[in-house]
Each structure stands twice: as structure tokens, then as C-alpha cells.
Image (cartoon, rainbow, N blue to C red; front, top):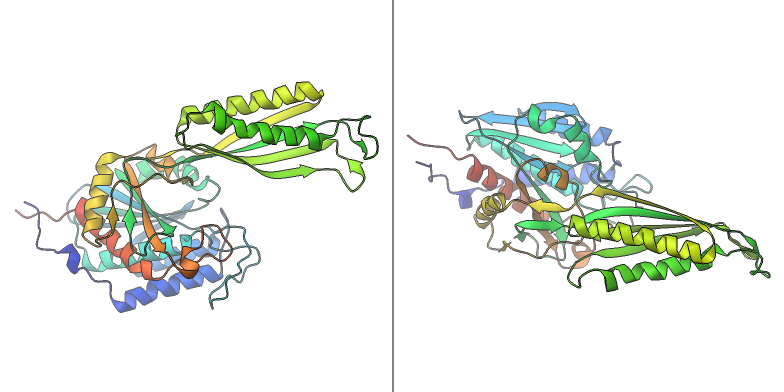
Length: 394
């Protein structure tokens, strides 16, 4: 029978461990590093894990291994190492010291609360099996999970299930939410290059102004979601950059459009790419210019596995009464999706707060992770491990 004497509700993260998590977060927040350059950050994580008497492997990211008992079950918990190329505008005393680089997505908090759980689990050993702590690089560009998969991280450590938490500004601090099936959209990046004939601004009839052509393409792209996909598709097409070689009195002969596509289904993603290419080709033919389209998907749709969601929800209920088991999908993307394409697992969202800086959007220059969420996050991880790797009695 299962050992039910260990009351998860009674699990308390000590004040010293809470302080440690906050101090660790502030330290990596001050000195953030971009994707695939997280040398100091990875070393700090590895150093912490070793100090908890956890075996460590370092290559692409950091992997910690903690085994106790006789069970052969193996689960993985994942956090991210990288920051974003954003100049921080916050004024707190641990603001980024690195120009144009900051933890604007909360990866500093994700690392800290997973380390807090690792410390607790190493000291208590209140589980039966193996926990793999994964700290991956370069989540922001959608490349880190794929890099670790290319190293065969799942098979090397015999991982059977994997879980991750991402903070959510605007949700009450400590709230835990998730859903079965789609939880995050895919992200595809596109570039549309237009080559025409530049010329003098006083004689537009002599050449082909690529600003005019580009503007027509931008406008027509908006009809894809509005008129070509079903109304509830959840797809988004955004042109985010419009770059030309024009000047005050020079009509540009070259224009580059860049943008971002989000979708909830692979078939919608494919349809958007097809329509984007048709629109670009049609406008190009009308104005007799050359147009080239690039469309690349780094982040696929993030699909939670229902059985793993159920386990995570049970664990969440043991640490908070703020649990949403079937929330709306998020429009942002997560490269955790690549792990979920390989093995079962679940992504969850942790409320970061609703007021002041903690409600600021992810990827904003004045965003900050809420230290008050660290304890809930660490307690959830401990609860999940106890749920998935219970100690058995004869």
C-alpha cells in the first residue's frame, strides 16, 4: 500500500531555504546570460546541485540526478538558464549589470525554485525512485530543448515523464494552472524580401517603390486570420519589422518585412505559410518585382498529456487552494514542447501576481519575477515528486 503518513500539506520550506532561493535568483538576475552563452549561470547551478549532494552532468545545460529507494521509476523536472536581449529599466537593487541583457521572462525564478526543491528532496529523501533536474539553455530561441535532445538526454538518463513550470504575470501569486492538450501556441518566424527599382522621390513612375509593395503585403497578410481561417483558430499573424534602404528623398529598391506567426494546430500553421507565399507572389506579379519568402518554425505547439496533467493537478491541490485544472491555452510559445513530443509530461503556469511590477508582461523591460512565488513553486515540485514517486509500505 502507499505510504500516506507523509502529509504533503505539512511540507514547509524553511525561512533559510526561502532566503537562499531569493538570493540565488537575485545573483543570476544581476548577471544574466543569453542563449548558449550561459556559462556562469550553468556553473552556479551545478555548484548548487553538488552542494546538495546531487550528481551533476554538464554539457548542453546542466543535469542533476537524485536517486533514493529501490524503484526504477525516473521523472524529470525542467527549468531554463537563459535571459533576453533587453535593457532592464527596473530600479531594484539586483537589476541587471549587463547592458542590453536581462531576465525578463522569469527564468531566474524558475531556476531558483527548482534548486529549492532539489535541496529539500536531497535532505528528506521522501520519495522512491530517481528525479532528474534539467536546467536547459537557450529556451528563448527555441533551440535549447532540441540541443539537449540531440545529446540523447532522455534515453541517457532513462527519463519516463517530464514536467515544467512557467510563471504567469497577471495571475494571483501562487496560483497554479494547466490544462490537458494544447497549452501553448507554436511560433514561426517569417521574412519577406522585396526587390524592386529604387529612385528619386520626385519621380516615382520611373522605378518601383518597394515601400508601396511592402505596405500592400502587410495589409493583405491580415486577411489570412480574418478571412481564411476559422474564427476560433487562435492564430496570430504579426509583421514586426519593416526595413528599407530608402532615405529622405530616395525611394527604396529593397524592403525586408519580418514577422511572427502563432498557431494552435500544425495544419493552421501550414495553411498560413501557404497563404503567405501566395499573397507575396500575387503582389509581386502585380508590381513586377521579385519577392522571396522564408518561413521557419522553432517552437511547435505545446501539448500536455492528460494523465500527467491529472497527476500534476493532484500535486497542486496539496500545496494551494488556487488551482485551475483546465485553463485557456496561452498564445505564447515554449520549447518545452519538443520534450513533450518525445515523452509524456505537463507544463504548468504559476501566478506571478497582479499588482505593480509583478503584473508587468513577460519580455518587458520592467518585468520582475515575484520572490513570493518561489516557496509555492518549490513546494509544488516536492509534492509532485511525492505524487509520482511515492514511498511504498509492505
